[in-house]
Length: 134
Image 1 (cartoon, helix red, strand yellow):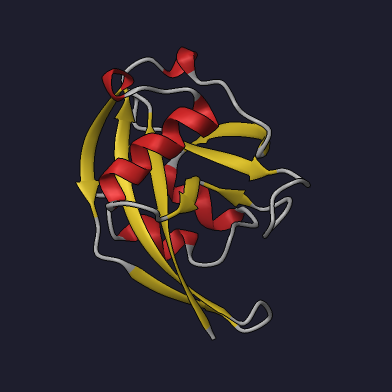
Image 2 (spheres, one colour; image 1 turned 90 degrees about the horizontal axis):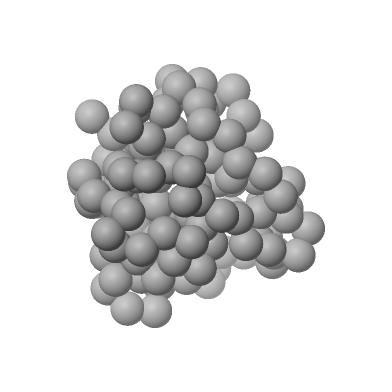
């Protein structure tokens, strides 16, 4: 079982809605599933989060407020032979209209956080959100 560390960033708008993103067909795993902003961990989790947020949704540090950083969560995917170690972070987006999706996602939605379990998400997304959401 391969161990892979990733960050997952959850974004809230000023009204408390949660942004979810549908993964496109060109990404390596979980195509078509809903997720947060995520990426492989190449540095410390907070720095990696800002890198992924810039690349995937076009937001800079000035556009965001870090609200919480949760304990890592292990998510086992036996089909892929991989154990993901998810480092969750929660941000408030100060200007949601600045969000621009890159090639990794085909669509986005702002939802009530309680609705997340009703979407087909990447494995462990609901549990990762619980680690950072009040």
